[in-house]
Amino acid sequence: MTLVDRANSGLRRVPPWTLYLIAVVPPVYMFIAALTGNLGVDPVQNLEHELGELGLQVLIATLAITPLRRFVGLNLIRFRRALGVIGFAYIFCHLLVWLVLDVQILSQIISDIAKRPYITIGMAGFVLLSPLAFTSNNWSVRKLGPRWRKLHKLFYPAIILGGVHYVMVVKGWQVEPLIYLGVILALLATRIIPKQAKRPRDLRQMKEA
Image (cartoon, rainbow, N blue to C red; front, side, top):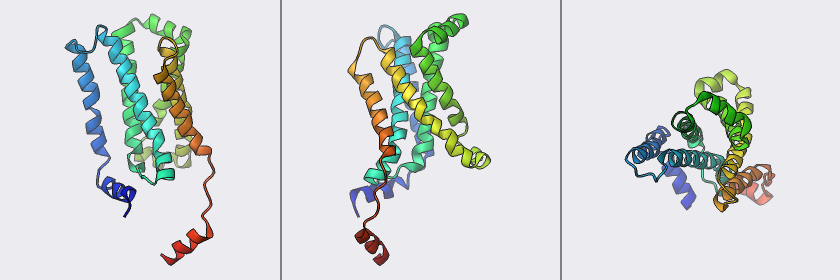
C-alpha cells in the first residue's frame, strides 16, 4: 500500500463535520485578539484583512481538491462541500467586519461598492458564492438535479474575482496577493488538461486484477 493509499484510508475515517468544529477556532481567536488589543494598532482593519485572506485560502484549498485527486491520487472529495461552506463563512465574516465595524454608514457602503473597483469586484465574487453556499446541502442536490452542478460552476469566476480583489486591495504591487492569484489560475488551468488515455498494458493489468 502506497503512502497516498494509506492517507486515503485514514481520511475515510474522518467525518466531514469535524471540519466545522475546527473552523470555529480561527475567527474566534481573531475576534478575541482584536478585543484585547493583540491585533495591531488598527484591529478592525487587521481583522477584516485576516478573515478575508483566511477565506481565500480555504477556497483555494477547495479548488485544489480535484487536481490532487486527479494527479496525485489523494481523495479529499468528501471534504469539498464542508471546505466551500467554511470558506464562504469566513468571507461573510470579512464582509460583516467591513459593514458593521469599519464603514457603518449605509450611504457610504453603497457609494464604496459603486465607486471603488476593488470593492465592486469583491462584492461580485461574494454574490456569486452566496447561492453556492445556500445550496450546499443534500436537499438542494436532489431538488436541482443536473442544474446543481451547473450552478456550482459559478465557483470558478467567484474565486478569480476573490483573487483579483486581494491584488487590488493591497497598496502597490505586492508579491503575496499575486501568488494567490497565480495559484488560482494554475489550479483552474489543470481542469483543461485532457485526461490521459489508459495504455493497453494498464488495461491488461486491470483485467488481471
